[in-house]
Length: 476
Image: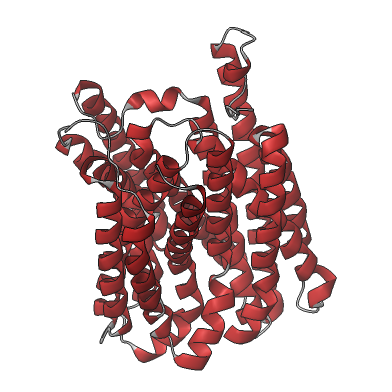
């Protein structure tokens, strides 16, 4: 039995790891211009520095989650941590563009093992109920902040120490966690010695990688190529479902999708991935290309987004325990939509405190609260033996949403820009901000649709536990 204080120290350690993993997906965006100046890339090749990480991270998450269930969550967590540190060093010492892209892909693969094992340890450390909801709320808030803090940290580090240090700073964090993990974390695994579902692992990993690749390459590819890749991904997903139905020990037990909380929570998480990464990317381009802000200045300008996400997460955690995640989810999307509306009004001459400050603040509050609601809804009622795969699914939802969000807003901004002047660039960015607003609307509509479909499926039954897509069992 883990003592009360030890559990919360363990949570802090795991959240630090989760923050580092999500941060590495966004921090590199600020450093891309410096990296491109120092290393040799083929035309368009530098985009694979962030995209290689996203491709392997998103593609291998479900596999990483099931491996942690089978082999032991703490054991897999420690192995993933060692690999993440090694590949971070390799990124920092990369001698060419190709070497850096390869190292980033390997780093993403390590993250795909590390992230779901960390989150599944959170779920097995805290029993179902208020404490687990609180822990998942803190985890969700940490992830939300990690997704927005890359510019705040990456700007000063890149300008002050060099782009290599955005990777080197991972190493002392990994060492600290490695020292404390055997002391604070308990090992656990799913019950029994289950077989490994090779067919399921191959098909779902291939489906996810093809889907993420299609999204990443969409701005540079023909419409036909993108459609063919998406169709191939859907066919692989269909094959995966057939394999899982016939497997005695499925990689992803299809029964978990009977949980309306899990389905609704992951839809919400996808929406936040779309919006958070999309808005962060567009604001990065607006500040640095249209306004000419340095990396450090941009980091300071965007700091309010991360700070507001922290505040929003605390508000969301407080409200979820009282009204449940459903209403927090809906209201958070509306709040973030209001912030995004302000961002669509930006011009080259807009003062920072006139629009951007307030838009980022309001969006960040919605993001923080919504991330908490999504995490709690998706994971609160998951069985212990499915903790790893459910964690992988939730992480994959955020990462795939983020990859799609960046690809879409990038393509829209490019297509909507008719020149290279700051005014022309800003016109394209304003339209891209409007697309982020649409992401939030789609997320809200999706949540409402799932709620309605599941109510119809229930045939109007009045059982509170089965009433809504985001209901969470609460004790006390």
